[in-house]
Image 1 (cartoon, rainbow, N blue to C red):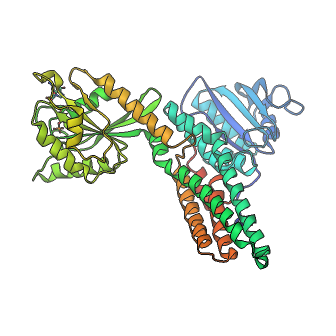
Image 2: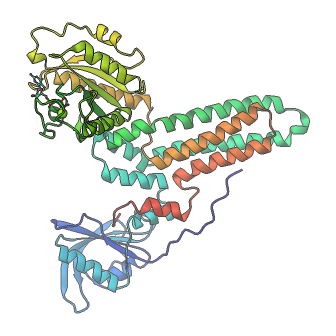
Image 3: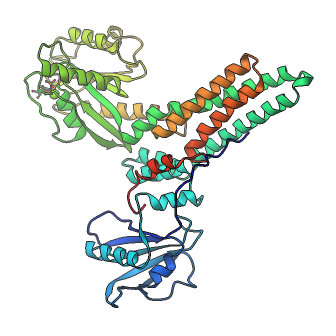
Length: 477
Ligand SMILES: Nc1nc2c(ncn2[C@@H]2O[C@H](COP(=O)(O)OP(=O)(O)OP(=O)(O)O)[C@@H](O)[C@H]2O)c(=O)[nH]1
Ligand SMILES: [Mg+2]
């Protein structure tokens, strides 16, 4: 019942590859990495120091790199990782040299002249995959780990890179294999009329697997938000103080502020890490009915971002007509998913004689009941009053998104697509079970589901898929 491995050839050669693994530019030190069956011989031919042959793995050695004329290029520290205990699974040497661009380039060129080949993007990781050191989901986790820019994004990437996500998928695949073997059993005994009891058990198992696949798939929108920054869209009527609030939240003069209504025309956004969570704050054009074509284009963009946000801050100018603003917001909410967290922010409280006179309950009643508007927060974007309350609200919103998705969250679009395809195939199988269709038809859908889940970790791969994944890595990784 295991799916057929895709037999399209994965093109890889067992030659020895070399690249600078540290970022381009000048630094205190740089690391040149060489990996492959000839790594020790090729490096050894330009090395003046203790011979590598006979050295233990995971040891560091001081020596010199010399060119064909015997000129010293640099004094370096060579760290040895012997197969199979290296990142790639092949013999690997990391040369820590002085960080001049010239030295880096000369050492790489010398190693190429001595028999190594310049590595393509992600080629070290691709070898690690081919040698069975890591699976595809782990390799993608490593890319995310390198790019991670907040504690939350780092945690999600690590979970993927260290194989926690892969193990969960493996469990799911095992359950599917069990499902498939139960189907076989039914086929074997179909003459003996035990079908009914078996089908009940099968349906239960299918439901459990579908629920878990769906849970993983549904964690994607939150997972993606944690990775790229949780989109918090600031919206409201012109002059409400949206850009002033954006600048306050970003701690930077990012957007132009003026008392002319309609100052902001385009989307202005940036990220900031707060309490280990990356937020993406988005300022938008003031919402109003307008005959100005350019302003209307800005408002269309604002509407688009509102629909794609995770959190909306509806800014109400407390010094202007509150009722008409709330009416307008209520109208806007019609086209917004009720899953999006929304808050009412009354701004300019410093300029109000008294409180806004509207209780949170009254404000909530005026707005659509289906929307999640847990709070009304009074702030002054100008003086900063109330901003701590707003920020702690945002942090608790983000944390609630995290627990909604359970412990493992997916952050990769490729994994999401595979899970959705897997779930669709399983739902078909579930329906066939309910309709009492013969087991061989059901088995076909189960095989398809196994195929899609296998694509995530690379049990099932094609060379096109591998190429598209590893080409997104940087050179030297
Ligand atoms: N008194 C007071 N004035 C504020 C406050 N926040 C913003 N303002 C003023 O309100 C005016 C409009 O502020 P903006 O931040 O440009 O408003 P906006 O919502 O971005 O406006 P548009 O871009 O036109 O939609 C400016 O003169 C700000 O100085 C506040 O908390 N208190
Ligand atoms: Mg503005």
